[in-house]
Image (cartoon, rainbow, N blue to C red):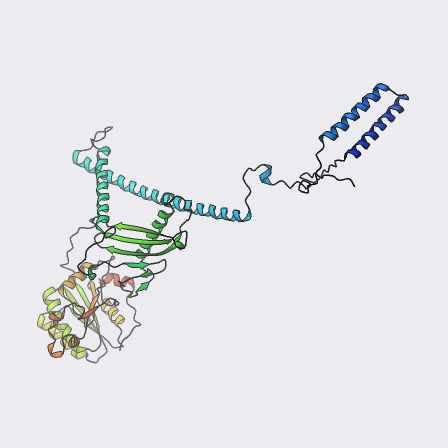
Length: 507
């Protein structure tokens, strides 16, 4: 059996069989005989010169076939089909990547893309900040130029004032340098790079710990939760800005310490942070991120320095004609009302003198006694600015406050919602006037609730007068920061808000 080597093209359409020496020779002789025969038929006689030429051509053809055919080999590795040409072999000079290498390369490309996305976002933010700073600086320079024009007269047309825009630039630059020096001094004075000596452990400023979900705090505030989600918007914005700045710093190419790190840090890499605020210097943030390996971490320390004080408002406030209407819902408790009227006469009538008392009494029990106490005090102090309203219904503090506020007919006034067991001073009444602003601000004071004086002072016979009991100490009471029943606000604001709810009752 004749052996052959198969050469297959890209489309598998052409097959060439290379014959062995004997087969090629036999075919060449047959061709020569056919040529001689054809020549004989055509000419009817032998032509010696033509025969010689035909024989020479056949010999050359045979020699060409024997010399140029591929060498036969028994090696099976050489007798194989030529593989299908891939795009890389046809024209793409990039190396082929296997399945596993392709997945790794895709991940690296995505990480690089995310890293550049972070960098671009940070650059956009910096550009926006620079635009705002430039606009603010332009306004400042314009203000300085206007002031110079007002002081030295307007310059003639076509001439710039001496020291105009160019003269103001050094002053603005000097102010900027002074501000930078001040912020650096804040960092140097804060307990960041060096420790500080304290007289006791109570002088140490504690740290708060936080994660993406929780804030662990020693100063629990109004919520009283040792661990809570940041509910205040300013706290959420603060921690969000710190985390965003930290990620930008870590993902900036220049921040890579060894130049070989390809990790793109995200919020999922954040482990925890600690923070504390020194009231006169600034806030320190110490953040920890997971590194590229399980035993490797990235630590980032940020500091937000407090700037110098800025004047926001300077105004004169006259409270000489601001009346405080004290609204008090009451049900029985005539003995406590008698004590209240005793110091109300001293503080509200004699010391302050710009108050109105509105008592909303529920029911008929002890009504005559309450009326008698109020009329006797008014007669003794020559006090006529009071109103006594009676409601023959079940006690409701919200209902009493609503009725008392609606009963005032003298225009807008500051309302102070008060209970019968609350003691206040003349200074507090001024604070009530100063901290309530119509249409802008309401005032919710935090009350200090006293313990039982008989327990505090060791028996009823040792209880001092009320003025001497007004001592704020840890063993005399506590701040009632969970109550919002006492408030100072203008009547117009109270009406616009929609009054108090009347569903809560007390018997």
